[in-house]
Image 1: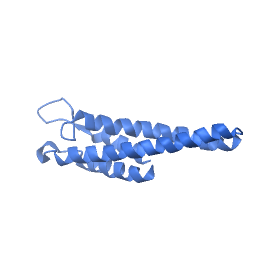
Image 2: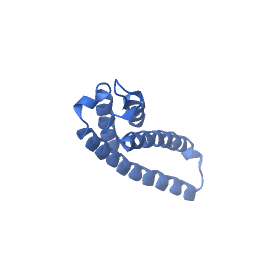
Image 3: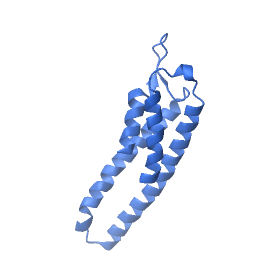
Length: 126
């Protein structure tokens, strides 16, 4: 759920434009990589959650202990990796938000703060 919130905040109001221009830019210090990173890990985390949820549903039906072991290790390894990636994302988004000028942000400040907050919560949920 946290990954979906981060993704939705960045897609919904993560890009804005100046009143005099129609070109969109990322709300995080005009750094497109910050928005792309948040959107990317949000989508991949959501898809991974769906995949591992399906694995958990069919886990009792898997009789081979070797396959079970590899699935558990894959889940553990992916969770560790994604915890690290959420930590990097939180640090990256927070850093870029700290460098964002106040006059560049007219709409979307709450969404940016929500993306930062839920990326922080995602560290502990993974």
